[in-house]
Image (cartoon, rainbow over all chains, first blue to last red):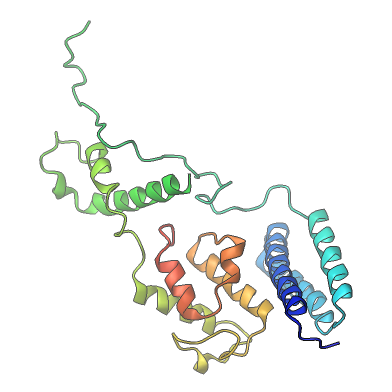
Length: 116
Length: 132
């Protein structure tokens, strides 16, 4: 089973990256659902145990299937209104007040204009 | 669009600083709270709003020390999460999320994968304009 060919290692590395990204998104989703911190800690440890239970699986196809199952359940449980940091893309402050283009300035002559 | 957001955030940070130092704009028409002219000036300085590197290092080290699976005495500014501190790859993900929460900003998923030691985390945070 430990055929150290480059294709096998590349596939394993890609799988590890998928697992990391999946864990990251699932943890943030858990925080979105369980807003109170004590509930979040409980749910986060449950999630961690789910990931740890499959930690030692060696067969690469089973790993692929497990990752696909995990991603499917993540997609099923995604929060409709996730917390996004305000100035990140998708947040509320994103491009809210862009800097004015250079060379433009406001002329402060309110009340002193000559037009009617 | 991200550049506009970054420039805007730097401007907002400078607005915070400029209120305290209002005497800089002595030549304006007595409107110290209208910084439209200085908006034009500050949008060219992109350096000043990033966090100080030593302060970032201190905060990152304290966050990692508060982590339950980490031995606090082993945490140095040069520590590698998996090699030195004995953390799992999932633990690395948790540490990165904790750093995001501490500094209040968002790391994209592909960048978050690459942060594997404290030094890279400090570099990333110090070069990010929206880190508080």
